[in-house]
Length: 525
Ligand code: SF4
Ligand code: SF4
Ligand code: FES
Image 1 (spheres, protein in one colour):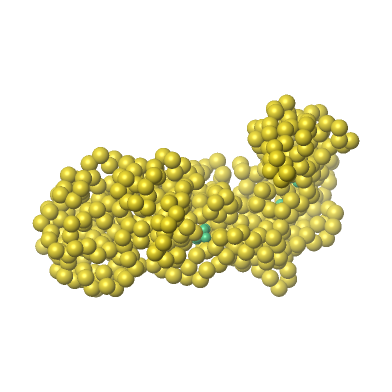
Image 2 (cartoon, helix red, strand yellow):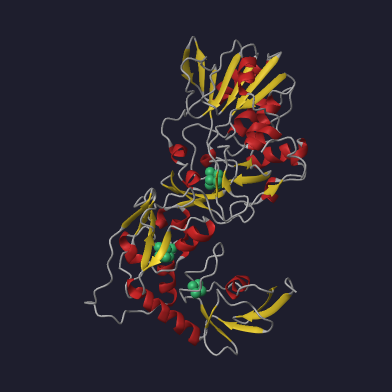
């Protein structure tokens, strides 16, 4: 039976796993990380590095844990003297030609060769200091990938990714024995839309991102769980910050969304998060000129304008705004003749051929689905036309919205409006971006996913959900009181909007949850 449980022990820990499980995966359930290089759960098994040697009772010699399936009653020892000696010898072999590059290598601090050598390598080399190590020059593989052959341990993860996952087999193992290196097809470049994943997959500093080259040492980085804003796929990512500047985006594992990968568009989509020309204080227009004010004064101005509003209200929102902000903006204008819309930048799709339902999507924003579920439409031109005669126009984080209106124009943004010809806002309220706040997005498949704050907000900027909850106060159109956190805002949303019923911010965890089946009907993909 394919799914029958198999009982075994690993380092004396009894476990029970489905038949067919690899010993290396079963070991994780026993709390044991078997050292490995060529094995990666997102790639076909190769069994080439021999680093995962373990002792299995009754087997005549050491076995590789990455290519051995569990069997009933199996007794695995990863820490026996024989297993450790085997792995120490593999490390010694790998290090024969590996240069002493750690002080200048981007991978230092997150290098599996460093880690396992520290853990179980020989304390000293047996090679003469005069031994001439293999040398090959650095190669430029593609738009964002450099290959440093001297550091390569020939694990073939990069080759297998391009062959089996990207299905564009431009890399190979050239030459044999100690002359072997990773070759690239002479007429090809490593410019596939998902090629940057080879840098993450490389267990050593052999494949490097040009974008990140020498930007930071691994131990200087703070890491925060986030969600990519590059398209509607909603890939889970980690934002790495150094001194409160985002310097790198890497995939975060989510088997239901992006598995282990992100596309290059998403990987490079981060510089704007740390741009310096942000609005840092609330601004109120008086006699045609802006005056910086504190939050109390700015909110009072906006509340006064909202309180007297009658007739039409228009919200022009960004599909990169959080679900919480989109919900509260809608609720703030409840009771008025409401029109809400967003504009979506479109691009080319770029699927990752070897992974079902994973692609750089044409909709280049993370929360168009959330916006539609909350009642915003895509007819931006009609909403702009309606703005002309609206009593209130609220622009949420869309600096490109060229608004002309006779009513009150309130702009929540962090960068200044970009249309000089359009009406300037009456009130400008500075808000945080995705790297500076917590919140959720809803991806194209209806998966609600949380992102966390990675760096401080500039100046007095506050999350949009906070600003909108403060504007609501205890107003006639519902209350913002009691909304102190993104979690509060989401939980009020889940209580109020059918599609989100049954979800809670805490239970979303960092992997997200999919909204009720059927809710997406009518929301175009
Ligand atoms: S470049 Fe990196 S991923 Fe590719 S074979 Fe060498 S060590 Fe492995
Ligand atoms: S597919 Fe979309 S969500 Fe995923 S990394 Fe690329 S841009 Fe980001
Ligand atoms: S990880 Fe098992 S042989 Fe490489």
